[in-house]
Amino acid sequence: MRTPIMAGNWKMVKTEAEAVDFTKKLVPLVKDIKDRQVIIFPNFTCLSKVCDITCPTNIGLGGQNLHWEDQGAFTGEVSAKMLKGVGCKFVLIGHSERRQYFGETDETVNKKLLKALAEKLSPVVCVGETLTQREAGKTMKVVETQIKGAIKGIATEDWDNIIIAYEPVWAIGTGKTATPEQAQEVHAAIRKMLPKEVAEKTRILYGGSVKPENVKALMTQPDIDGGLVGGASLKVDSFEQLIKF
Ligand code: PGA
Image (cartoon, rainbow, N blue to C red):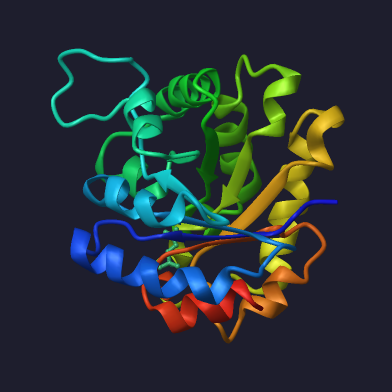
């Protein structure tokens, strides 16, 4: 009932030429895939050229961030309309690196989510605890605060487009993956935090050192509906293996 998603978050990696080269190689490898959704999140400067390649295909394209205003004096920011203008259908919101290094809060995550939905972009809302929070037994509380903060004011019909990503901060880029059981426990808890009428249909992705060696064990957990992958999405062959897990 929930189509799995494999999403590549390229972060601040790849020039436009590198992104184009990668995408050209990826297209034929995934063209026949129908039972899962593939999405890539290149940096802003690559989106337009990458869209020329992906937009006629089954590969979805997304931005890594957006601002909640339509336009104005917000140097360095990008609006939802701008993302749509270069072919994006998706957008990452509240990635832990944005929360950690760029002052993203539950409040700004909520504003961005509302704007993305108003503009018909599908948001991938990221939540997750730090190692200190996990060790203090606060994982569920932290995740619940992030989820509740993010989804304030969301209408039931908006849930058709919302994707959640659980990304424990201690597992991102560290090589330390959550065990399938640890991830499943939080995913099941997140599903319970969502409004009842949408909980079963909402896709919840796992992110944090997903790689070809651990993808199957994670993705076969009942409440894990796909992956949000950084490092292992940067090479075509490993991303292909993840998509075809
Ligand atoms: P990672 O990153 O796969 O390199 O751990 C995941 C993410 O930050 O989305």
